[in-house]
Length: 467
Image 1 (cartoon, rainbow, N blue to C red):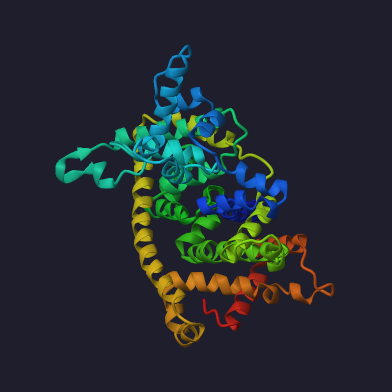
Image 2: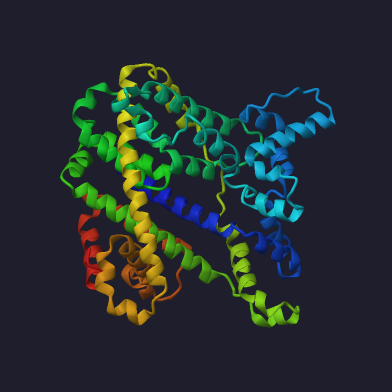
């Protein structure tokens, strides 16, 4: 596994998650930002405005009318007069949500409806592609029994695998054609969380581009291993695991003998959430708190203090988490171009449907467990610290809750585990923090630092985290 690429991908993912957090404002928060503009610097107040479209027209102008007409399959004439142009804009708005053109709603009610579609990050997927691909008779999230049903003599696997290719190819190419400087990172994440198509087509390409490896590495057990990568939230990290599995027979054998599954579990369900929590805590500690005295001097309603302090934190962290460059899609389009040459073959249909079937099975189990875990989290949140301490063994025995509890405690205690606190300067810089995590990711390379990784696991076991 390429430790440098993996550590960079994980840090980018963690910062993106935090970026999405600090640029997500409720309708009420945006109203407070505008109402109390004297609290923010000009740049900070502009951040909130730049992260949201004021209305559907602003969304349409950002991506251009013609681009959206094509995406929404709306017939248009470039010579349309103002009335015709307004009708076409209304058609796009209706495509996003019929509720947005409900004449019975007041402007305030329509503003509330629009807010859920108004965030720029992810807007093309949220407003257009989600409906285009996931709603209707044929969707990219189609249940297996609606594709193949032996009892009813139904088999639409050839039609579905063709539709999946065409839709994914269209999505990637349309994302590159948009005229704005929009970063497609969140669109890609949303598309992949819903459909898993980027992972599937990356795997199809790797499997069928090297037919000699298919019988051994890509048997039913091998396909199950690849499908387990769908449990990873970020498509770049998924690609890193898939590439390592494809290139490295050693990694393949480790997975077969369960060692790789243990590594995958620790990495995906502990270390990544741990990194996000720790970075969040570290960055929040860098922001000077908004003092009550300042709010008092400006005659701010005391009932708004807590919310205004949260807004201050988000606005301050925006620049720290924003990506410096746009996500590139060239390699993904090359993969689709390659798969396009074999999409009519029986091998393509067989491999695609096998992966789709395995991933769907995983998704069903995960969704069931998430519901159980959410119920347990609600219980934990309602209990006192003393109750949690008394019932800690039961908490640890619940897998869903244990991961949440464990990563939170690991993040809180990271200073001691990493030995950063022994530094004479007693100052934790971002560079030191990143270097420490670089070392952690290298410990996953068993040839490089297996002993050090064992020390790390022993250390957290000694602190009561029984893995």
